Length: 188
Length: 188
DNA sequence: CGAGGCCTTGACCGCGGTCAATGCCCGTGG
DNA sequence: CCACGGGCATTGACCGCGGTCAAGGCCTCG
Image (cartoon, rainbow over all chains, first blue to last red; front, side, top):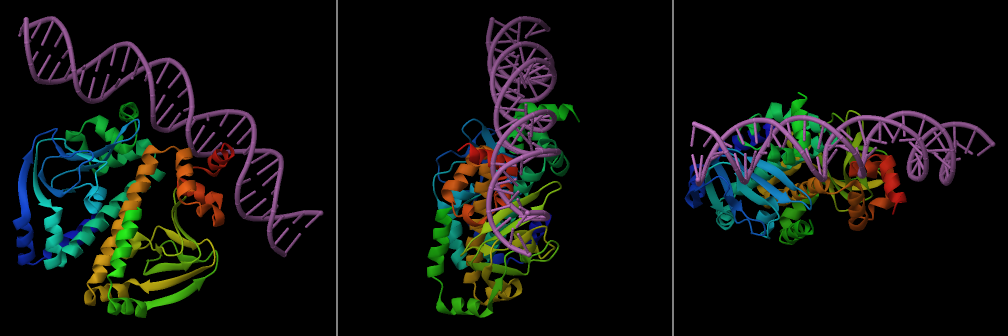
């Protein structure tokens, strides 16, 4: 994962002033309150949200349970992949875990910019590669790690999760029930 | 998923002759025998394999079990995402399920071509989007479907899997033991 | 005919889920 | 300042899905 971030960062350094400026011109700073929704179920995801500070989460409603698919922290970009790319109603919801400040860029504007600034296509590619690599790792975790191992891994690699986020949401992110998570924590 | 294929196909139709020609010039047709490896564990994935006919699979060795991550059929492109992008030794192995014919393109050549033919970057983006969407769906399946439901879904959406592929491999693809798969099949 | 690969079937077990009761923390209002 | 209530986490009892181990069946191929 880290290597993908590096690739992305290296690329950012090669971005010319003009391109950066163009992107900044179409981005709008917004703030949200804890509990606000960045994206509702059924809404089309027309914006990407680049977090300046605060925490957000993305989740969807399974038949029986709510499943959290991703958490976002400062520096992350939040969007519903499917809805954003295909511009169709979102199954996923994005919600503020804390008060939030974001840079908000409309997809329409960004797509237009890509035509004038082809480097943004390469950026998009790197960003998507990062997301795919992240998904691959998550899939790996579910396939080979037990509930306890997944918890341990998250604990070590991303302790920040445990400061601001409810255990209920962490449990659903780890693919286990709140009760099981509680027992795992008691046992360690 | 189908919508992503459509996007990709629509894009392919807009590709100019010159770009297509350039790609064809660097691709090499190769054949493999059932059981041959397209990529060994620890090897760096330097090629993408576009299947003309036959079936291949990608898998890795967990601590206790072997996990199949993907099957490839005619028209699919086979590569180990991590190893190909970062050019580092692969955890994954790619193996021929049947005799195979492929168009083989070296990553070096393709990356060079991307500089002369920027449309290939857009192609790469669409391809990666498709893969990410596929991963998202797979993750969804593991999170909300039971073993039986995953089997049913595969059965309905991809019956071709059950012609040439061993149940052992299908089981490991579905994330269940061979015995459980056997019982599910008996029960239906 | 025998051997090996693949799948099936049975017996057993444990991880993690569900349901329900209890505990704990904190904000609000009397 | 305390009492109450609601939201969140913990704990206990129970259960079922799917895993593991082992035996047996059934091809195919030499």
